[in-house]
Length: 142
Image (cartoon, rainbow, N blue to C red; front, side, top):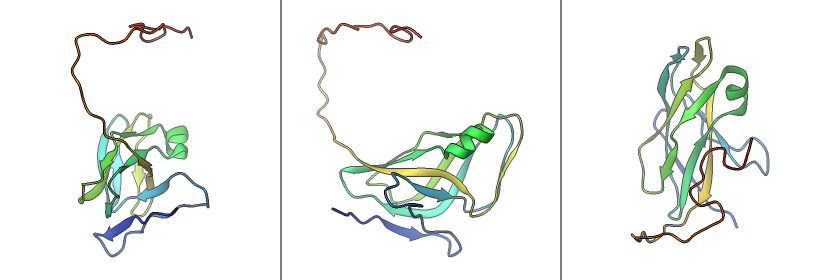
């Protein structure tokens, strides 16, 4: 079954997202304008598009593996709800030691459209017990 993702250009020069290869999980998001991100800085990078995610789905913004691996550029936040109709903006942080320049039209992140379920939230006084319990970080070893 194929669903349609409706995309609106907010700038006539921006690229419409597309999957690079058949079977890819995510499509690329590109910068609407040139943006410099200094070492240790975080920036919001506009994409120049708005999208209409079908109800029951969400858009999840993830790192481009090449940017994360080579330059330590990481995404911040990145859940786009189905009811949102504004410009898609990507939050990034440069964890590297050098500034990075995103040129207009350059890939900045990728988005996965994923089915989501909304649960009924119920307050309780106790939770069911498990083997792990309250053991947190590092509880299973290194």
